[in-house]
Length: 527
Image: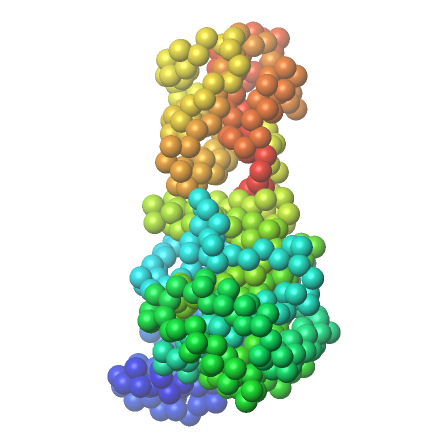
């Protein structure tokens, strides 16, 4: 609150307990800062309702981490959750209001229906500064960085020792170059019993290293870690200086093991200075920041992992990181999941920049967000490798489509085409009951990732297909197109709709498109 008051000297800034200050604001505009606690929101909804100052005046609401607590968690029960209900009441207290949703994980917001009132009217993206180490640094598309240490085959004891030695070497480099804090984050589980076990493992390793501080093997291990250091923001210190600093840290026990979970008494003050090993689970989510965090151990697994939760929990990203000191201990499976999340995040950003309808896609084993905030009656989850075609397509025009595909003779197997050409073909179709815009957005999303991306096109002519069939493709065409597991495949059937026995409504020849989705991902769309 003090920072906000100092920054907003022309405003009256009130906290949740300052109702009288709010009412006696004078001629200055007022900023009210509230926690998303239903009792606090209910009290201030009543205060706003009973205040004359909102008559004829707008209300500007900034909802930080808007996807976390604000959405209706009872949407599938035809009820309204408490926090969501009181936010609605606050919004409705003024004649007009602007509701600005802010988050780094927008999946839940983007998958709200327009009927809910919580789907954003537009999306904007704030670019991070040049010193920010984010998703593209940790999970680049074209390679696996050298700082990634895969832990699939290690035992927990070996991992603990490796993490401790790595963090001690990095800490020595930081302390010798003026830093006051060095943090290591270990996130293995949401279970408090696991946090206690990991903390005990760390103490055991630290005690052992202190006891065997002059062991040649320990010195060799320190030397190996030292050789991987490549600091970008400071001069690399000599190994003798690093070695002596590590010895001093161990000898004087100048380190802390901090546990962050619902039962621990540790707070942010316990890791804002010194050498710290931070162990935790769910409490490592939103609103927690760690200075000089360079060593990460992430092994939290879930039967039904959620992209936004994983992204919030990793805590890797920041401005004060030194790219040459980073190390990430992780399994192949989790690294691949994070890479998928980062790839989709980049696609969302690209769509937002272009003002496009945003679609979201993830592998079958990764969900975008928690189910209880998504309206299941309106959410379409389109499985990878599935086929989709319109019931009553209209050609705009039949002749234009025929000309566009005249070089495809109708007898060859699927042919490669650019996704840009596929989009141009789909622009020629309409059907009020088929979401062509949604499918085109999926393809455009793939193009945003790779401007030269290709799909496959299969053209067949003179087809006698009865209107209303549950499947469009012949068995052979289905088998031919199904070979392309990782691509969009567009099949165009020229149907003899002028044959009265086939029952097509417009009684004329027409093209019917069938879209096969890539088999590698599920795609999420709101009707």
